[in-house]
Length: 525
Image (cartoon, one colour):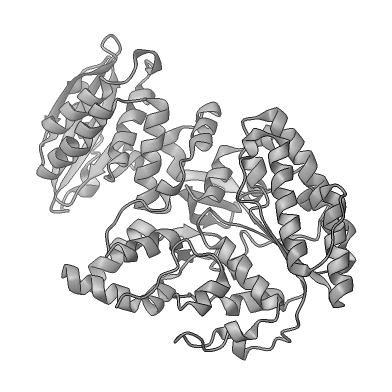
C-alpha cells in the first residue's frame, strides 16, 4: 500500500493526525525558538515548505504536545524529547498568499479583514469596527488579556501583495504604505509579543518590518538554518526509503544511478556559505507520487513572467546567469524602484548558490538543477524570441535525436528552422543575440550546454556534451565557416576532451544578417 504523501497539504495538524509522512524539522525549530531571539524573517522560494513550517510553529506555541509524540503509526518527533515548557500562547497567524492584489488596495484590505476576523474568532475576542491597523492592535492586546500570556505572531508570505503589484506602480505604492502601517504594529506592541516569525521572498525597504523593526533576525543566509526548509540527501534516504525501493523494483534501475538522477533533477538548492544543498519538497513528493516520473512539477506551478521581463529590462546577459556574483549587500532590503533581477532570481528559486568566495565575501550563483535550468531557458526563449508552437514541437523531437545520434548537420538544420520562426522585429544583428538564442535552445532541451567557457588558450563560444559526443561551436557574424573551424583548431578548444572516449565535433557557424538566421555552417570531426 502506498504511503500518504502530503502534497499541497500545509497544515501540520492534518499531517500528523491523518498519517501523512512528515520530515522531522523540529530539532532545528527547537533551536530557533529556545534561543535568545524573538523575531525572525525567513526567505525561501515558493512551494518550499514555508507554510508547513509556520503551521508547525503554531502548534508548538499552542502547546499541542500530543501532536509531537507517537501518532498515527509514526514515531515521536525530536522536540518531544527536548526541553520545552509547552506553554499555551495565543497564536495569531496570517497567510497573505491568497488575494488578487493587482485589483487594487481594496483587495489587500479584504484579505487583511478576512485574516483578522478569522484570528479573532479563533481567539474568541472582539475587534470592533475600526480600521485594520486598530483591529490588529485590538487583536493582540485582547488575546493577551484573555489568556494572560504573550501572543505569537506568524505571517506567511508577508510580501505577496508587493510582489504581485511590482509592475503596477500606483497600486504598489498604496499597498506598500498600508502594509507599512499594518506591520508597524509589531514594533509598537512589542511588549505583548512572545515570538514573531515572517516568511516571504524578499525584503522591501519601505515596509516597517525592515525599516523600523531592526531587531528582526534574518535567517535567510544563516548556515545554522540552511536546511530548515527543503529536504537534505540524508533526510531523503531516511524518510522515503519505501518509495525509493518501490521505484527501483519497478524500473530495474541501480540505486546509485537513480539517486544521482534525483539529485540532478530536484536537488541543488543552497541557502548559505555552508556547502549543504536540499531538494525542493514539492517536486520530490510529486515525483514519488507519479511512480518515479521525472518532469517539472515545481516550475509548472508558476511562470516567472515578471522576472523574465526584469532581466530583459536590466539588459542582463542571459549566458552569464549561471555564473553571477553577488554580495551580502545585494540581498539587503530594496524596493520596486531599485529591484535587482539577479538576487530576486535567487530568492525566487530560479538561481541558487553554487559556491562562496570567502576572500571577496561573494556568492556565485547557478541554476539549482535540471528542472529549473531547462524550464527557465524555455521561459526566456518565449519572452525573447516568441517562436511558433509548430517550430517548438519540431525542435523538441528532432534536435535532441540528432545530437544523441551524432548527426551534427541534422542538429544545425533543426536550429536553423527554429530561428526562422522568430518574428523579424525581435531579431538583433549581433553575434551575441544569435549565440544567446542557440544557447537557450540547447539548454531548454535539457542538454548539457555551456557557453563562454574559459580555457587556457581562449574562450569557447558554446559546447554541448552528450553521453557519446562533444560538440564545439564557434560563431561568426558575416564571416566564414572556415574561419570559425580554424579558430577551434588553432586555439585547441577541444584539447581538454581528447581522451574522453567521446567523438568530438567542431562546428563553425556563420550568422547572416541579411537572412537574419544561420547562413552556413561547416562541421568537422
